[in-house]
Image 1: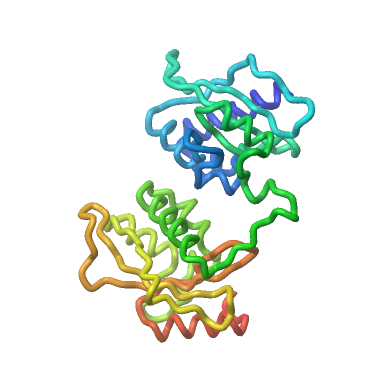
Image 2 (image 1 turned 180 degrees about the vertical axis):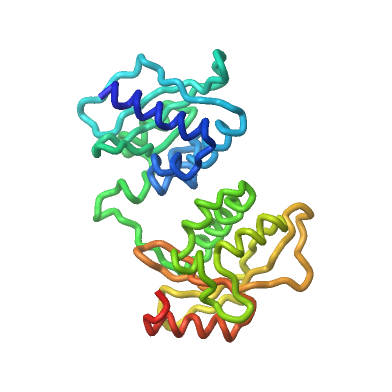
Length: 270
């Protein structure tokens, strides 16, 4: 098992050195890549990737770690190193229940990670039992606040692979919204080139009869100036697919976006 864990970290380091966030993120539990899991000292996978890649750091496994024979989750200490110097030390919890290991959580605090293993702190949805699964309600405003914060983070970091993951695959490469619409890829290019932030206007949002679809009105902000871009607003049609919120289309024409919703209801879009 130790040899497999060491090989896993070699794979991590390869993706870090290549600045390959897409494959790096694939080695994480999906729920913990974009957010901190475990406590105030915890690190999201996204945060760790940029800290490592921006500073030319790699992970060196502390070979003194002990395997927990009674758990599928293993606690591993690792140094953050640049050349021959250690600049930090973190703890990582690995799910080793499947041949392809996944990182469940990372933190500078050993206590936080031990609590994750002992299930004393909240754990990612995907590693909870079926009885504990959280049902995503698309109408909860607090979900969207976090959702758009994460989307804007991908734009700030030019992380197209992660941004694309928020979209229905067809909508990312094709404009399904008609007049005034953009594909996800076109929106990504425009938003990153112009340094946009997408801020939801919840009081204008429209919940349709279908409980898992919502039309979100957006205010476009210029990130560099921290101010609203005069006269610029947009619309996103979000749907719930496989208990995840996905973007089905972006546009500026209200009637076109409502028409997209009707086509989605008919099953003629995806």
